[in-house]
Length: 487
Image 1 (cartoon, rainbow, N blue to C red):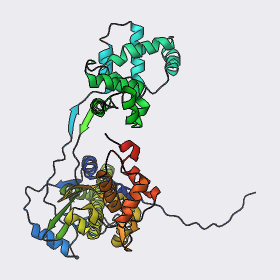
Image 2: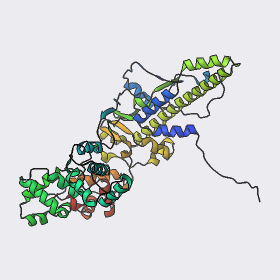
Image 3: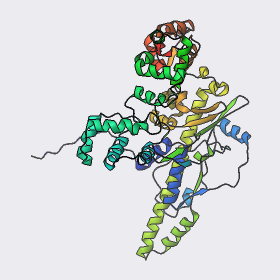
Image 4: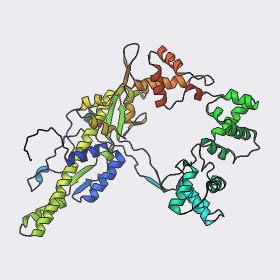
């Protein structure tokens, strides 16, 4: 039986324009440029104003930064000029944009590359083996990972060859092709089934008459566990050698690559591209001035030609074709106007966010010393700007700033806080910097344990638990004391 009832629900729905704006905010400079080019191609009613030249005027930059009442960005068109009445409902805020005089070369350098897979295939086709063996070799090569290792079991490859390729072979046959053909290819170490085999394949290609190389090969073959655990005394006693001999052997091992496929791309195109800063931060006379990269702040306008065409078509109301054309042009003009507003809002959001970050971390931008970084989380910036935390997260994601002390990843400026013995809040990044310095100065023959690090940092005023030291050490990619030991 059907029943009627009332139900009250609270919900929130984002308009397509709002979703698009969030996507624009999240894009870094290069992605934003690509998105802008795509929009310009798709919407002929949208034009970018190309300025012939720009004058360097840093005084105007300082005035724009100091003046809280800076005018909004001009879009070179009047929204009231439209001959139709229905304006887009999505409105945007004014911008506090300061012009950026810096030019960055954002040209992507595309170079023809070659994948490890193709490189190995070229070589295996030059080997004098049967057609079936070539197919088996090709299948094995196709199962290598990007580091050049064969992670799959030989039995699984034998089964796959039977089911997918119709090639019935044996485990011994596959191992023979792997060890006698694929592992003989360049680069040395390819086709290994583990780190030990990878290093052995490389060391065996070197001159075996060399004492250090021979000892290194022996250690890799018979004392690999002792080597990885850095039980150097055990190795010295085992081979009855001097410490200098072991140093020479370790030096040879250090020259080997654990990832021989690392120099190859998994695709056929290798993209070499420099980081393009999204923001420019200048320091002048103690004043920290944040700006947008000029590529993030293009001057856009609605096409005058399209507005004239719309006026022409609108006068002829009797032709259905002209009505359809006028509707199409009106939609493009609507989209162009909204896109310009969205770009202005994006610039405004980015600039307000970087301004808040600069105010928070002014000392760091002036000194460049990470120890001067203050504890800062997304909520701190959100409270200053009035934006939502998710918006701040989108702004700082994948974005960089060009500062007097080099390129800085914005996320690196954020950190939690801890209280030192003086009752002051300090950034966890500052503590990590101290931890790195202490480990950097330690005696590598007797590296400091985590317990010893706790004591040393406590002497510097940082009362931190051992598990916290271990967590920070792992975040800094610093191994445990035993693995930091050196001769």
